[in-house]
Length: 294
Ligand code: GUN
Image: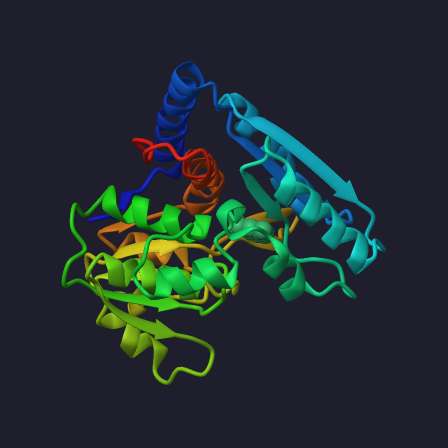
């Protein structure tokens, strides 16, 4: 038997279409155009690709997109001044500062400066704390995408054993909180965990978010498990080019898992779609409108 492949491309396209419908509705009924500002500091090639895709997809959903490119040697004060200006701008409902920032800039201070109501990355301590407390919050986009992909296979996650491998602020930690909100039983594993294969073997839901190529092996998995691979690792090929692989040994896992996300074409597709969702939600909340239908 081989695993069902969870098609992030299709699921993300459906989500973007639902966002576009709601954007059209709030425009029509309330004259509100949700706006997303993305700040890119420096010229990391991978970040430039992400930022371009955010810009295109934001506009395709009918929202306003504002791009701010700053040189890698921008001062902390100038970057904070831009964030303050975006906080005040009524056309901007979502602010995303692309990470990682170049060396010399204080990421924590920049994240803390973003208005929590516009923090569509869900990284501000207000939002992270609200999520951890089980209160309504803007939540990080990649974990939101992971939950949607899981729910494309399981209507309810209640009582399931989930393992999250990785404890970053952007993925692992918030994903744990979202899984708890879904009433899953959650193990959080990381580089110091003992007997990782043994921990993974107990899990019905496996989330790999460590950034290590093909670290999770097929024989670690419980037969029939659902595997969500958050890793995007570029590895060299024989011909001198590179290819993308996840944190899970995909071919091995296909033979054991019940369902699995491919890389590319899995989680990566969902992150930008969820960013559009968060921007729409932030815009409605700021305008005092009811929550949108997506
Ligand atoms: N870099 C890679 N993924 C992300 C993300 O979701 N948000 C931000 N701000 N930076 C990123």
